[in-house]
Length: 341
Figure: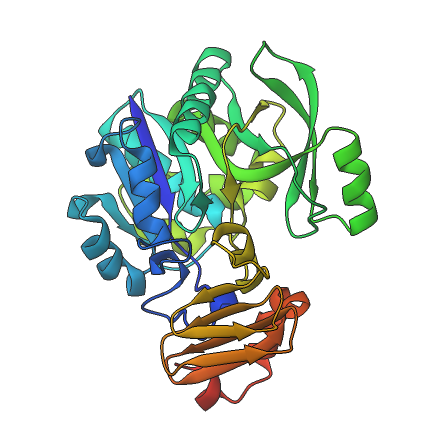
């Protein structure tokens, strides 16, 4: 009854110029020799069989993902348009239920870095068990390791059992002061790893998410294009989890990072004695805490600190690590002929 949905949308603009439209973040070897999408499939081994793994992606990425992951062609679900995670997960869950009326669904993203595959599988299995036993939507919360303002937070409520708690509330991307208060009170990061039965998800969508629920008859008729034409783009968090009273949280017991920016490579890649991450023909001399990725000519750093340098696809990017989260705004300011690679 176990199914997995691998979300592979997004253009990965925060990894420009390495990330491109046809070779975005999900297909990049950000943490090692294999892409994050390939690693996600490896982490599911033994938990969900390949024939029950569905991948949701846009048209530009569907072919490359099919080649990289070697899943059955019918398991690559191509979105007619990008409409955030709510419609994508509803469609994929509905498809799992169409193939298996008792489907239990695990949802994860194709661009995470997970450092402990066994721990991930134990946590995912526990989340699926809680979803089935308590008939709830389950989110996996990670214990914060830093004051992170780019993540959502989960405030746990009363215990459901020894392994799960109700969710009291969600807090989306707090400022630093609020994030510190949330961490001190025991709040968890909202990882985006979810579990539910297909029946429960679709029932909760019908009850709480008018942006999507009015279009469900199109899915019943098999008209995916009409479903996506009619839905309002909304994330599953905002459109459902923050509205439903049937949400539980399970604590994640594994290493996890969503690797949202170049700066994150300092957390998921080996560093030299001076704290530098050097990928490709890169050399550091009296440089500290820098990130360098070069797929072209050698790059040499000397006498600098907290700098990111990327040489890929005919472009060179140099920025401060503190500005890594603002790369999208930088790209928006560039001429198209420079930005498009």
